[in-house]
Image (spheres, rainbow, N blue to C red):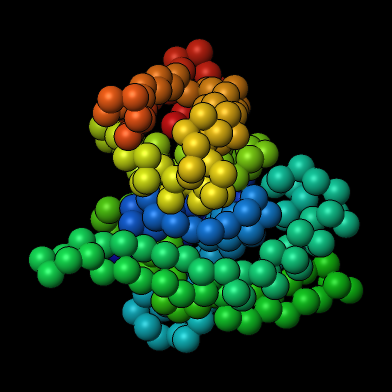
Length: 254
C-alpha cells in the first residue's frame, strides 16, 4: 500500500463527518451549478468513497463511480429527519443526471472549457432508505485520488452551512488557503457562486443576496476572520479582495 492509498484508507476509517472532501482547484473555482441539497449529496458521496474505488476510477479500470447514499447517513451528517433526508437524496440524485459541471483551464492555445453531467445513473431504494448513484467517470479525476492542485476540507466544516453560497465561498477560500487571499474579478466571483441574473446585473444585489450573507455565515459557523475589500474602476466595482485566516478563538480549523 503506497502513501496515497494509506491516506485514503485513514480517511474512510473515520466517522463520516470527520472524513475529507477533496476536489481539483479547477472544479472548486469553476461553475458547479449546484443547489444546497445537490452539494450535500456530492460531498457525502466523496466522503463515502473508499481508496480502492478511487484508485480504480482514476486508473480507468471502471466505467463509473457508484456510491450508495443512505438516508441515515445524510440525516446524521446534515441534521435533518430521515424522511427529509431520503427525499433530498432522491430529488438531488435525479437532478444530477442533468446538472452540468464546468471547468476552464488555460493552455498555450487558449482556454479549454470542459462540461459534463455529474451523474449517469440513479437507482432508488425507498424500502431500504437509500439511493445508488453512479457518477460520470469524467468527473472522477477532479474528485478522487488527487495528487496536486486540489482543495480539501473535512465534511463537518461544511455540513452545518445552510446556504449554497456560503459553501461555495468556503471552497473558493480553501483553494487559496496557502496565500490567505482570494482576489476574483466580479465576473469570476459571479460564476463561482452561480449567481442569478439579478445579482449579475447589479452589484448591490450581489452584495445583499450573496456576498454579505455568505460572509456572515462563514464567520459564525466556520470561525473565520474574513476581510472583504472592493476593487473599483471609477464608480464601478470590478473585483473583490478577500483576506482570511482561522479565528484563534474558534473551534474548527480552516
